[in-house]
Length: 366
Image (cartoon, rainbow, N blue to C red; front, side):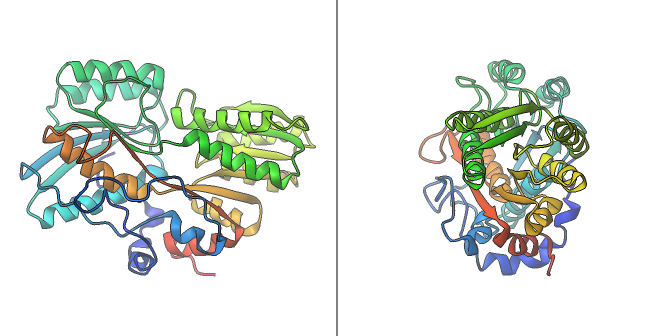
């Protein structure tokens, strides 16, 4: 898949971006400083405005002056999925703005149909020989990919990480743009679930892809939170490989094994949908918390099947990734121009926020 792949579900959002822009703050790296604006994790206290805080469509390039008039990047991520299509929209916004300033940015944006560290390894080794200005990676498996990024760096490649999964601590990648608080996201979602259940009950966790740092960290945050409450028990931890169908099958089996299941923690964008389908079909009352902005998930949130979702600002991740890549390509190291880790936001949204989010992202008006 190349960079022109656009999220079909979000195509209609082009018409609503102008309206959303009036209600969204600027999320660029910051005028003049090259540092992110408010990049600490958000948890809106006013649920009426939570959806409007979740995604920032209004961005402007920082006033850093690129040293070249053409850049060529390579980005690879875990799997072909609408979440990364939303990241691509932010990248394309930055690309358009560079072009308006007379700077051409081309890039390949590629991923396998299913998450695979082996596939990602092969792609990175091919990219190494192609002479890209910067190679960007959403790490598929921390243990496997991090040493490879060290090798690429040692060979002279300029390597960054982006999206939802950074490399391991001490990796030689130059910088990371994305979610630096996946553990906290998992803990916050699970705390909301525990409170909803009055701090007692049986819980299952759907993780995602094995070895993916973001999924594993969220699951760890969930497990540690549940462990603090003596009347709560984890009865199942399963890996759905970021697949709606697998998540559905796993949830159906969990419900068969534990018909009295009280809740599910879903650690990626796909598994809340699969879990909600199974819970609905089986007539279960299990409470679901999960991640991100899948259209079906938002409808389940609106209908009360899903209790809450942690929405990451994918648009800002994409926009800021391209900005940082340009600065890295010019030989700038983290410091005054950009931080080593550009931390993007996660906002917890509830049923009250679902209609606003559906209209803002998908043009769904109810």
